[in-house]
Amino acid sequence: MRALLLAAGLGTRLRPVTDTIPKCLVPIGEKSLIDYWFKLLFEGGVERILVNMHYLPDLVRDHVLVSPWRDRIDLVHEDKLLGTGGTILANRDFFDGQTFLVAHADNLTWFDLNAFNEAHSRRPGGSNTIATMMTFDTDSPQTCGIVECDSDGLVSAFHEKVPNPPGKRANGAVYIFEPSLLDVLAHLDRGMIDLSTDILPSLMGRMATFHNDCYLRDIGSVVSLAQARNEIKDIRMFSYNEGK
Image (cartoon, rainbow, N blue to C red; front, side):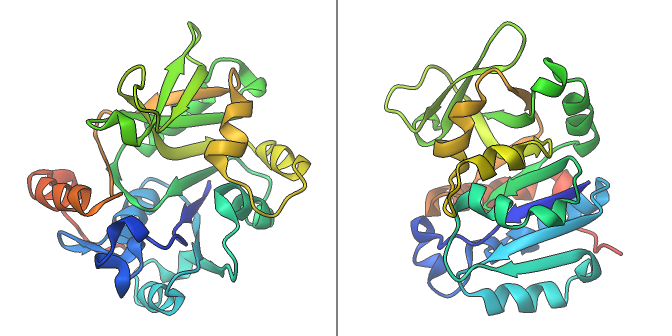
């Protein structure tokens, strides 16, 4: 499996922290945020990772050049932000016609990638179900996309940052997609595509879920960054060993 880490955002909600550093390089505990993703995905069996860049790209590039996993990381620069879906479509050749993983690199998370893959392989609806979305239980549902599922476990409704969400089961912004998603994206015939607003609503009844009951924290504000820095001290799974 190959994976795309979405890391091109401006990180405006994290200012002034991100005035001089891209969000994916914000330090949490022992390492930068993106390093935890590299450890999780490569140790979980991912073959290669593509990281998209836009804001302060030289810092991201320099960071990857000294990573122990640098030979398995590809970088792509976006002169103009393409949106989460647009980035997937622009780099369709990278996925080599295989099932692939996409994640927002501005989350701090831990999960069993093998279990995630297994859930996708056993997803209800078979080949008609082209995606599996990771979910988690959030302590701030108004700031997340809240998910509802039908009796088969397929996503039936999605409420993106609404004032009174119907629950706390949220979209973790980590997905496993079938290659057929690329045809859905291409059909829009646009460069700028956002997964949450342009694609996910069209996948109701065609998207399964995998619940992350390990850990996930959206690093979406200075407050949540402070929470992550405090929580990571007590989470042994984040004890960092350099990759090979």
